[in-house]
Length: 220
Image (cartoon, rainbow, N blue to C red; front, side, top):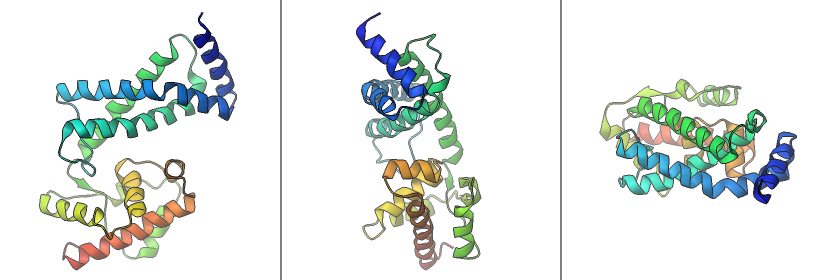
């Protein structure tokens, strides 16, 4: 057994016991490997016609989309792996285990994107207080805000509003993380470095602003 494998084994055992330094070391050691693995999987899916870009982030260049996508997906894969590291039994290489997690995560992600390809993450609530209450509720899901929009012009206007210079970028990212990527508020907090309460406020305020602008354009 090489020194690297011995070190990994020790780190894995410590990570299983909840040692944060060990977790961070594993993430650092395998970040590049995981990103390259994700990139390979996405390119393979693209060749097979199975890759679906993130509708709300696509820049129209699928290769560039894949490259950008790979970094976000890598983060999610590593988070998922570290949360479930207790299930790693050592029957395979740690890198192989990460690859399987990445492949399964991406397959699930593509299915979700396929279902949402023609959907928007917005549904008008009766009042902003109701919206805030739903967001505060534990287990709130994106489905409660989703409504089908087949009108591409409407979708285009929503995206234009979200990415306009006067739309708060923190609010936009919080909305996209919550409703598009279906991340919970705690995970968004970890990604952005903002407190959970701040994430909730960004989602609430961002939705309020988005609805106001859509109403001004006669779309609500």
